[in-house]
Amino acid sequence: MPVLRKWPFLGERSEEIAVRALTGDRAPRMDFAPIPEAAATADTFLPQCRNAKCKSGWMKLWRSRQAPILEGKWACSPACMQELVQTAVQREVGEWSAQQSPVHQHRVPLGLLLLSRGWITQEQLRSALEAQKKAGSGRLGEWLIRQKAADEEQITRALSAQWNCPLLSAESFDPAAMAAMFPRLFIDSINALPLRMAGRHLLYVAFEERVDRSLVLAVERMLGLKVEAGVLPGAEFRRRQQEIFRASFPKVRLLEAANARGLVHAFAGMIEETKPVQARIVRVHDYFWLRLWRQAWPTEDRRTLPAALDVEDMVCTLAGNGRS
Image 1 (cartoon, rainbow, N blue to C red):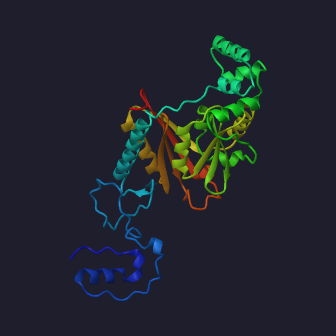
Image 2 (image 1 turned 60 degrees about the horizontal axis):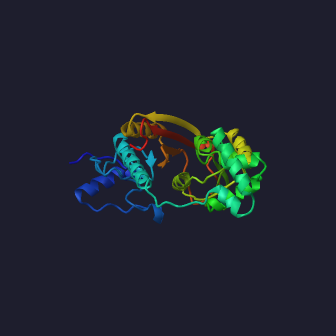
């Protein structure tokens, strides 16, 4: 007779029920509380490993781990979790490669936009371009402001038209809440600033000069939110950026992996160490971003934002060619 294993959720009569099931006898009636419809699935008590290569079989009743979870998928062992991570990383590499040949979208140069609106003259534009070329640095808008050919509001409105995005306001900006949205590295290196939530599903993200669509898409996928991107006047952007830098960000680990295999190993190791209830992987340019949630989020009720202590990040790059 097969070895019997008790099912704790059946209580003291678990062994009796198991014997009757194995011998073909009719199991006695049990008075259970009804299981909610959403939870009444085979995975309610016996989670199924989502690694397609798993050899253990889903009826392995002695499994005790309920976490970690990667992108809604449970793995029965560290080896299976590594397979899930590898699949996710390969997906990000493939999607990134597909995005490298987009249809070119022509944008009217900033100087011509300002010129067409009558905000600067041809001589002012020529002078700013010459100063920029001579200095070898600085943005055109900065040089126009330095030479008092245009003011910051005009530059920002022109950028809004150039990128076909709204001109945002920093009203109701809460740096402590927004610091948990994405790693400080992206705020610093990409010049992106999470501004505020509108309702439960919309996050406003501001940029100083150009909208980074790669970051916008990554944040949408990571947080399950709709992101509205726009521009913020330069001085206001830098002031708010300094405010959020003083806030508490989620703990982050930065790593440069020698190759994709090392990246997968690092991500899988961190997932197994942290045992998150949810984790996701997305790519932002040459950065691979892993986020881990210690508490269930995102949820349908997003009025309560994740706290910095509830999440942890790992941001990894590949040595040499980041697209390999």
